[in-house]
Length: 191
Image (cartoon, rainbow, N blue to C red):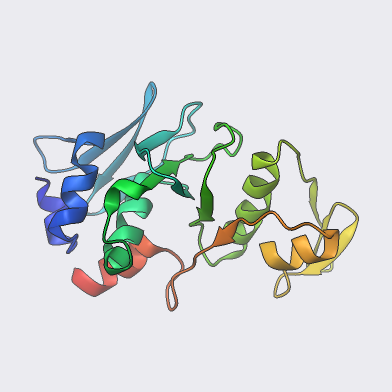
């Protein structure tokens, strides 16, 4: 078992679920394999790769997509009580490359941050899952133009984008309440 995950307060059942999908180094840091590249997490650092291959854990019909593997672990740590059967879950971390995964069957939830980059990622990944691309342009007045529709930063969500475009993808988003990411939330609660 990884000391770092224990220190972060990751529940035992969550650690056991993810254990086959990471490697613990002698210094206690953790590596998550993204094909030939790695996500590397330690107490004071976190490196997310620009990788061609995603990191995948589990094979269930409930699919959760995030930037990083530690974000997936953090999400499940905060919400383990909602998932009594972990075999129904699949986690995909895409790193810093949005188009490196194929369309997944099942119920999809996106776990990107609350900040503007996370909300833009929600839109980019949801369109990529439908084998489409969304051109996003930032204007000088602080507004975003996506597929000919203009959004202020406050208005910009996957839901608002889909309503404007008349799309019902069924893709959900999950955000932490008082933090930008689930990893940030987990660190604040336990370190």
